[in-house]
Image (tube, rainbow, N blue to C red):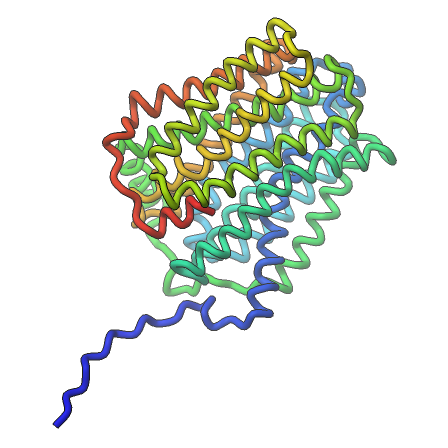
Length: 425
């Protein structure tokens, strides 16, 4: 008489497991397009910032506030749209958000002054937040485990490539049109996204999985997250690293074009080279995580970024080495941020798997919110190389201090394996 071996319980397949390769490819293309609209909206008009200053006869600081408006809209929008999409589904908030982005982009074309342009950029940010939040939520609805991490890695590569292309595309457009033409292109892209989302993306959150409880339940979860000192510290570290990045984004066009004499196309290439370094660092993080913990990588990355930021400030203040020294130190800071930004969020989110969506929304809101504060600060300090370097270095130094004093790396719990995979990508 033979005894059958006990069978292991089968794990039910996720909706993504049932998709054909062709359906997965289409999903990647749709979600990649949604992810790309954020960086394009933020960065595509950067080469035109000096031209906007001249057109409106205003100050660089005032024009940089239009960048702040987009980041602020992204920050607030994530906090609102994340819980909303959990309650009513993904498609309706997505299409409504992109439609808002299209309307705001069209109105930017006819903006009569910088104040109106700044308000419309807030609307653009709110619309872009819907695309960003829903794209990530759809991946989590359909996939789990390694399949989730693989698809997420492809989308993160899109997020990294889009900032490289955006200023270059913007510089190319400015050969044929003025800065208003950039917003025409963004509006056209938004219309295309509405068609793509309507035809190519089905609802992925069934009614039985939607969260109820309204505002009170959402605020309760946010309150629990904010009481976790380590989580808050890691979120601030991620936000301060983002602040250093956006100080560069806000100040680089003025520094490289007005102070060092690069034209719009040369600026696009220099900006793209820095973004390549940032992307390369995020991908090198995959190899580093095979031998080192995220905690250790984060500490070393912020240490290198702090030293490079202080060197950047010294080069900017003294002029030693000219433009090459300035660019090399900037690129080292960006590479250090590229190592810090995947690991700090992964460590933070690994502490609250039961509220991953809300925790992700809070993380994104803080990152873009702190970035929104950093962008105009560069303009207030003068928009020159010293002003930009001071904010970039300040962001990296502050991130290092928060990590050592508030987070205390030695007290961090080990990451769950799936969180390490997400950090690696």
